[in-house]
Image 1: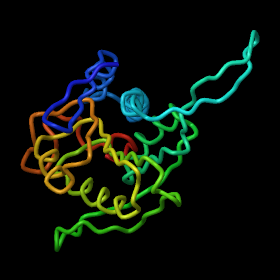
Image 2 (image 1 turned 135 degrees about the vertical axis):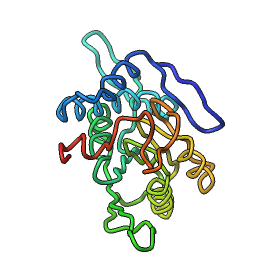
Image 3 (image 1 turned 180 degrees about the horizontal axis):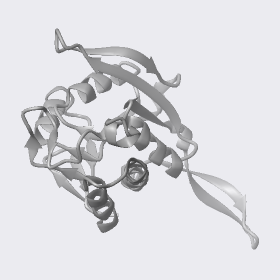
Length: 215
């Protein structure tokens, strides 16, 4: 797995397999079922890079030939926090790669009158202070939802916090790092920017609608 750093805290995973799957997601004719599967597959691959420096613990095991001290990833120290609803597909891919990870959820929506982000649900494991939180969403567009989610998760005092998405817009990266410059972003691509409606260009459309087939 390879990555390149864009700016100071943005890590673009440019592995050929990741980029191949992302291209298939971008195609307009890709079905909802294929889009959902590809989102999960890419997320599992991103998990490898995100956990590259995650601490290991050593335990005694017995192979068919002898006893040895062997490394294990302490998945229980990882918490995947999905920004509902579209973050579910990303979370599923990471959980497939790290089944022992814990899960959390945060529900947000934007009030059309005030344009403020409103939280309607939040649930995370207890004792976050010794856990690494992976906040996930398919897209980092304007950055408002990601900023609100990270602010909420920071209130639980996690040991470390990372944001994971599939594609990002420069505007979203700038907005998020204005408020949370300490949080690294892992993604498969940083696209050109946002259109007047706030969609990432070239992007892959509305991730939630394409994952769930609601449009």
